[in-house]
Image (cartoon, rainbow, N blue to C red; front, side, top):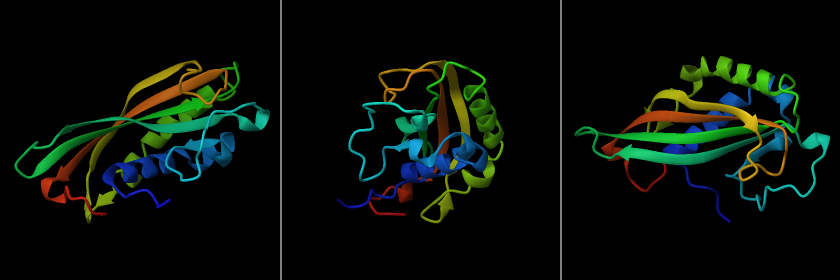
Length: 172
């Protein structure tokens, strides 16, 4: 199987995952518990059994795009949306959820350093990033890999401006 194509959206995904998995987050979430839907060897992320080593778990998924292809005569307005779900496997709220939410809030203040610097075809295109929804509750069984306990779900919206001339089916 060939590697995934390079697109503005995949670059945003990679940069968001890098921002989220800062050293402080890595102390809470083992790299092996980061479920990536962009890797070639992923077959089925659902767990058949859960051990203490399986939690907490982080899943980052694409949750849609909105686009105004002709926002101006030269640019398209593209909004990439991603859901970040962290399942704790634990009903003790302070153990992970409170820490994760604080780390994410702190990391969002660093977004301009990493996310605004993303380039496509030699130009930056991310103009703003914001969490549009932050939900804490019990695990959503439909989206998790089978873990129970508290889950925090952050929905991020990336506001991007991409020159119309950059909309070609070739890598950046």
